[in-house]
Image 1: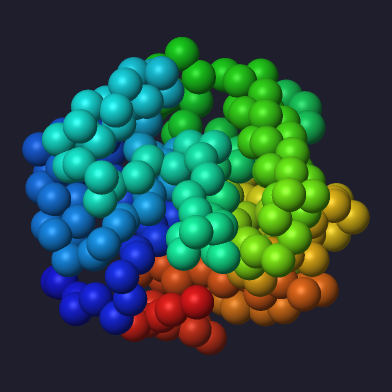
Image 2 (image 1 turned 180 degrees about the vertical axis):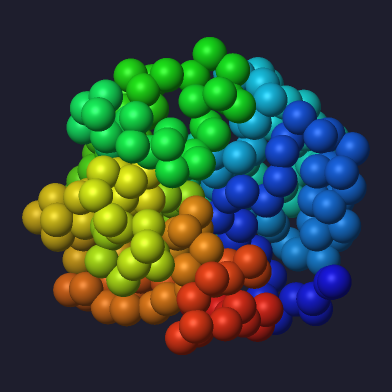
Length: 237
């Protein structure tokens, strides 16, 4: 199923497919890029299935060479629109799993990341969470100082909170640590947080929109498990 563009820029918040399946993945993106001025893709956890994360990054570089300037792989990357009037910050923002007991609970629930992503460990998962969180905080502080009149949109694959972002069945016990984190609690106190008008996320298959402080949080999954808000192919921000 294809959709007609309603805006010049398309945000894809991850888990679009497996970049290891290069033919199918690139065919989809070639078709999509032909319809938009730019396609901004934040990698999800599924993008690196059946390969290592560094290998997925290398594949993304090759894909970018193939697709040209219309495709942007947003792994800790900033994109300026209208000379910086709007700034988009994109990263995966892996969750934080506090201990190995929580990890065991997550794996027992059916999560396959630690077997399907090559050379991927609990420690690396948490390190990526810390790295992405720091990157976002530093970017916002810089923008707040240098471009205080800009509008900022954050795009992550994992949501920055558990509240209103997942089905209740995913929030029981330690399993919840794979479906969000407490970044939102800290984000509210970051310099530059007031500039963020929207935070877009994926991962949970739960479509929602809610406001916290001056920021609207929104997800728009095509494969949606929520009953309150269906996928909207014409959603804009």
